[in-house]
Image 1 (cartoon, rainbow, N blue to C red):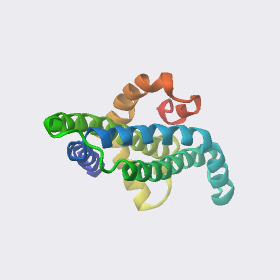
Image 2: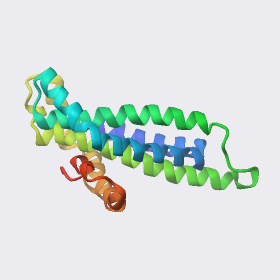
Image 3: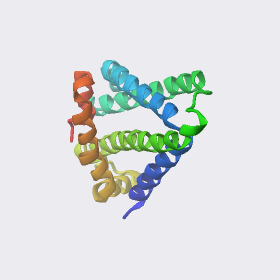
Image 4: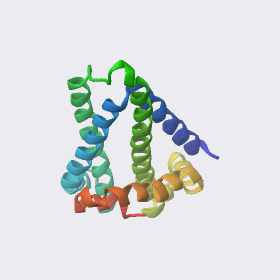
Length: 183
């Protein structure tokens, strides 16, 4: 078990705890914003990737992966902030408080699995598939070795993310396959 495994497990446990304390309504809002962010990232990753290739002389696939991740990240942050601010006082009534916590924990688990799986897939594709581990810098070699030997990263990227994709495939745009089908 390496540092990436420990970080991913801590992020997963953190998503469970955050889901428990935030409740079902806020977690549902975050899942909707994640879906909208995924749609926007699927639409605009080629433009951002092309800009990254021209600006930083990057490889086309690296530019697309980084562009997809950047658009997904910034859209998720901005839409989440707007959605959570709008529904900041929404919660289930007192008698349903335990259901709110349990549902929030389940939705937090789904949200955490998707976020960690997406990040794991991007790391795996950048470091292993596209050869980022061969860059002659100590940090990149260490990161490449950690990604290659990480069991948790491969489990999230290959097994759990493909399970989430099989569920979401009917409602996802076709361009979202860059992150899901690149395994």
